[in-house]
Image (tube, rainbow, N blue to C red):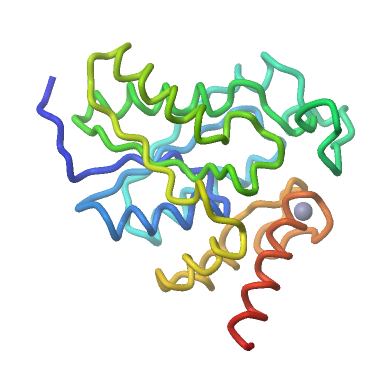
Length: 222
Ligand code: ZN
């Protein structure tokens, strides 16, 4: 086991708005950054290619891992195209776009992957503010998992969540301050229908993203 390198961070990187903003946040705060992208059975394989492209643009080493079993374990509309996607959060629980265990698996795998490289800083773009009803985006879950990972591997991992307490408007602001607003706007994929940039415009992910951007641009002008 190599000694921990406190100045390198590993980011769980999907190539969407949030994790791309976090990638550039991490580049600002750590000496070096590496990105790890997962294939988890998502409908749109193009997501992974876009993540690779962004990592190359950002000059960050990019790793990819196939964990498609995650999408098959729990039924959800992001990995099963026979299920009609919920457009809103139902009153009785998470929407069917919720992939059960996704962040639990991603961060656990990322921690093992990081440990092998002597990295103890992990970065993820989850947010409790705009959490869309996904329980594994909440701060309590991340803190609890952080403790569990440290106990389970006898390490001192630190999970960084730069977007935890900010909304989509403020996430655009952060991208702008990091000098990557155009890159995030044009090169990332957030849309549930697999359309890059401004997306399809009407799926729940596009709506959240678009409304945040409109609010931010309006505030800039105001
Ligand atoms: Zn969309």
